[in-house]
Image 1 (cartoon, helix red, strand yellow):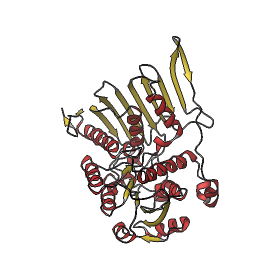
Image 2: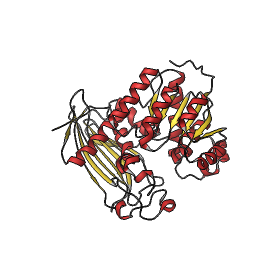
Image 3: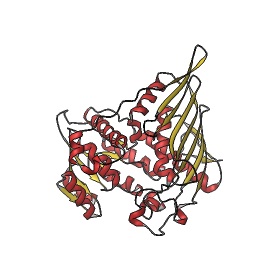
Length: 392
């Protein structure tokens, strides 16, 4: 239970001062009237001080445990490398804070379950940063699905492909021990969560997955952020392409194809086929292009619907005072993170479930773990009721 009133300000701490904190969480908190970021932590103290100065954060730490001991925080954002999500989240929960953890929730199902058990035991909120759910076009499609416009969804396909876009080459992003995986763990996790949410979280029964490492291991396909910073032939032991087929208990099938690099078009796209209608959602449309199209029929005639998608209003004064954000090319990214912060705060103040529940994030983690296990063993992974998975 939250004992905060609707006028109290939440004392916020951020663990990790990298890109997602600087361009996602911190702008969201500073635009929110009920939050004050009082502390930030990063083992790279120079970077932490730089970010703290930009956002007017008073206290800087190199160790998150020290921050949690001294700052008495209400809410903590965990924006660390993936391998640290679970330990940092558990420490923050144990310190009495609610937690917004970046995606993926954890590297393993066991870690994710411990995070949930800890949150339940200490009575604090836990949510995960699947910000695409908060994009207006995704919200519209979700509403249409809930209203029955598509009918029962029996097939879904997610394609998130880059021609040349391996991010953070030589950083923790391309280090399996720290990241847990590559393209699938980075961008694929977003597509997987989004389609599961649109399909009302169906229960999986089997997973067949394959991964490839064809570009990064040769120092190619480095069009993502960080290539100019790290450079050279660095460690790359993660996937740059992952494909999977997931079958569900209700008979539905999901096809997933995710890449950081490949000889293909670049796209972020998903398709839903239902018994009464279908939809295509383009998460990265060309300038002036259509991001959402719905297919149905009227009087036995095919009908295409292109819903009007509103823009998320961003704080113009705040953007003007932060030149780096004003020049940031993806305003949809900033807007979705702003809405994510709003939902997290509202769930705490009004003691309700956040839009992204930890149980939903656990399902994503189960599927990620199963795809990688299938790729490693070359076999289909079968789920059993009451267990994470069991091999056939």
